[in-house]
Image 1: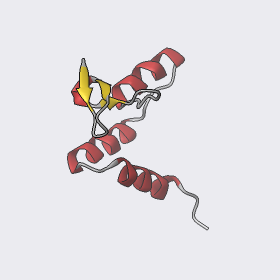
Image 2: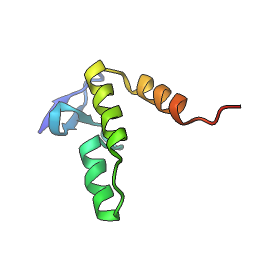
Image 3: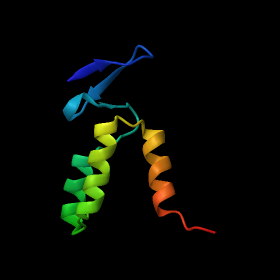
Length: 76
Protein backbone atom coordinates (compact mmCIF):
# COMPACT_ATOMS: atom_id res chain seq x y z
CA UNK A 1 0.00 0.00 0.00
CA UNK A 2 1.38 3.44 -0.89
CA UNK A 3 0.78 6.63 1.08
CA UNK A 4 1.76 10.22 0.32
CA UNK A 5 4.29 11.75 2.68
CA UNK A 6 4.54 15.39 3.74
CA UNK A 7 7.42 15.88 1.31
CA UNK A 8 5.23 14.76 -1.59
CA UNK A 9 6.89 11.36 -2.01
CA UNK A 10 5.33 8.04 -1.24
CA UNK A 11 5.98 5.60 1.56
CA UNK A 12 4.75 2.10 2.26
CA UNK A 13 2.36 1.89 5.18
CA UNK A 14 2.82 -0.65 7.89
CA UNK A 15 0.06 -2.11 10.05
CA UNK A 16 -1.87 0.48 12.06
CA UNK A 17 -1.18 3.10 9.37
CA UNK A 18 2.41 3.86 10.32
CA UNK A 19 4.61 4.88 7.40
CA UNK A 20 7.89 3.23 6.52
CA UNK A 21 10.24 5.80 4.99
CA UNK A 22 11.93 5.02 1.70
CA UNK A 23 15.60 4.27 2.28
CA UNK A 24 15.01 3.54 5.96
CA UNK A 25 12.85 1.41 8.17
CA UNK A 26 10.91 2.25 11.28
CA UNK A 27 10.35 -0.95 13.20
CA UNK A 28 7.21 -0.99 15.29
CA UNK A 29 6.57 -2.91 18.48
CA UNK A 30 4.86 -5.82 16.69
CA UNK A 31 7.70 -6.24 14.20
CA UNK A 32 10.28 -5.96 16.94
CA UNK A 33 8.47 -8.63 18.98
CA UNK A 34 8.41 -11.02 16.00
CA UNK A 35 12.12 -10.60 15.30
CA UNK A 36 12.94 -10.89 18.98
CA UNK A 37 10.94 -14.13 19.24
CA UNK A 38 13.09 -15.67 16.49
CA UNK A 39 16.19 -14.62 18.42
CA UNK A 40 14.78 -16.01 21.68
CA UNK A 41 14.42 -12.58 23.31
CA UNK A 42 11.21 -11.90 25.22
CA UNK A 43 9.79 -8.69 26.63
CA UNK A 44 9.02 -8.46 30.33
CA UNK A 45 5.40 -7.79 31.32
CA UNK A 46 6.51 -4.50 32.91
CA UNK A 47 7.98 -3.39 29.58
CA UNK A 48 4.78 -4.30 27.74
CA UNK A 49 2.84 -2.19 30.25
CA UNK A 50 5.26 0.70 29.76
CA UNK A 51 4.76 0.69 25.97
CA UNK A 52 0.99 0.30 26.37
CA UNK A 53 1.07 3.35 28.64
CA UNK A 54 3.05 5.28 26.01
CA UNK A 55 0.40 4.38 23.41
CA UNK A 56 -2.46 5.31 25.75
CA UNK A 57 -0.87 8.69 26.46
CA UNK A 58 -0.06 9.29 22.78
CA UNK A 59 3.60 10.10 23.40
CA UNK A 60 5.79 11.19 20.51
CA UNK A 61 8.93 9.18 19.70
CA UNK A 62 11.06 11.85 21.40
CA UNK A 63 8.92 11.72 24.55
CA UNK A 64 9.13 7.91 24.58
CA UNK A 65 12.94 8.04 24.29
CA UNK A 66 13.16 10.60 27.08
CA UNK A 67 11.04 8.48 29.43
CA UNK A 68 13.01 5.31 28.64
CA UNK A 69 16.30 7.13 29.26
CA UNK A 70 14.99 8.56 32.54
CA UNK A 71 13.89 5.11 33.67
CA UNK A 72 17.08 3.28 32.75
CA UNK A 73 19.82 5.91 33.05
CA UNK A 74 22.29 5.42 35.86
CA UNK A 75 21.86 7.96 38.60
CA UNK A 76 25.04 9.89 39.37
